[in-house]
Image (spheres, rainbow, N blue to C red):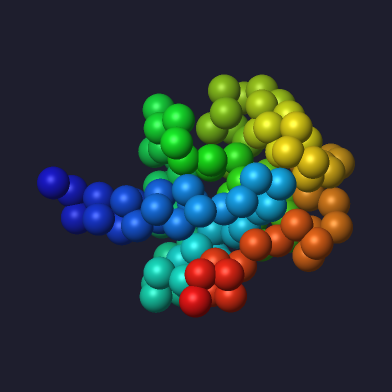
Length: 110
């Protein structure tokens, strides 16, 4: 078992709770998990979740609402399409009105 597998699974548990039509950030998940400086590790977890249908990785964006994980969706516009299908507006690879759609696990899950 790899050392980060436990952390990754905790990331996936939080990600599964993100409501449809909302987004969160790598940093918000890391902070919620008590590892505020581990946003990059959350990104690695999202990158590793490609074959997990129950992990809505498309709902995790960077702190500015940019679709930085786009390349892990086959280099296509799949991440943007999935978000738009849920009602999240995206323009130039960035969630529009980010604060309106932002879901903070630190506030929502406590």
